Image (cartoon, rainbow over all chains, first blue to last red; front, side, top):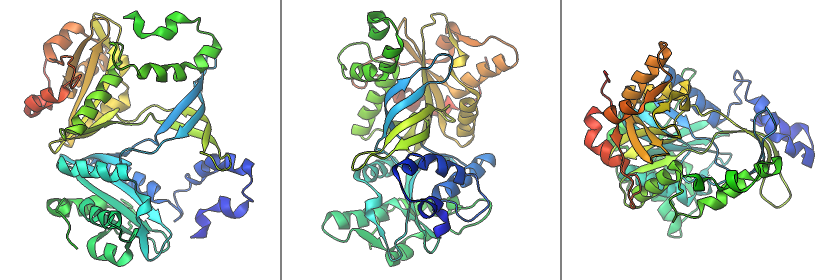
Length: 212
Length: 212
């Protein structure tokens, strides 16, 4: 899957290239036809499909940015001249599906045998916990990029393995554990990742406490 | 209420001041004790209160920004050097309250007799419409800053007046119409704007079609 990362292959990563990384990434996003779509692109595509057909209203939240300095050139748009990426206090995706509040985070790993829990941070775990307390549905979508396998893992299951780590256990979930306790999301064309089919079938048990 | 805008009064608005506007605003936010809090600050405060007490999980979405250029200085955080404000495709606030999906936008006006509909844009109206179709609760919180009166207006009511404008009618909702068809939100201390009390009482009718 190296063709997904043309920047890293084509150029020496000089400072100048790094400055232009965002611009290059933007161009890449326009080629929807190849298989090099990221998990985020697949999900945005899927959510647009859901919205189009009145199936659900789910959006990705904007990237949180701490704005420090803004220029106001006369008669043209304000330009942000200095800003920093902030850590998100919630998950990236939320919305409503048939009256149910949906909340999830999506992550991918190049790792082949386990999913590192470093992909999540404490704020996000706490956030999903409160969502479940409010009778919303919280889960994570995990992608193994080398094998292109994608799984939906209900929050209580993630929380179980998170607590195992907090209590001194391993810092990842093994792939076997994900296969056994998660739900595979097949990759399709329309929609690309029909994760709501799983939510629909399993709503009654997605929030159930998980015991290994 | 002019003391709320120290920048506009204390300085001549030179280009240099405009560049520092964000920095100054940040400092202002730290003085929670005075009455100069914006509607956004009051709502963030209220949502933090709800979260603390497990009443609801409602967050403001980050400001959408189109990032164009990022610098990666060695061994320090990435700096966004060029970015632009984007128009939001959804509302600013959403979350879950006792299993109910909540979605709203908050706006204030200095106008004393009516609320200009220019405060909303078509994307937001369309978004709230789809939320109501999915059985979520959508509304707007409107603040008249001169009188400090705050109202919750259910989306179907807003939509009625929006359509009146689209069909050639007035470009605002009169204050009388808001008083008669909205629900006043009293300003308190803890929480500052207890809008969920209204949602709780009126859930059964908040999504009802509005007929003037």
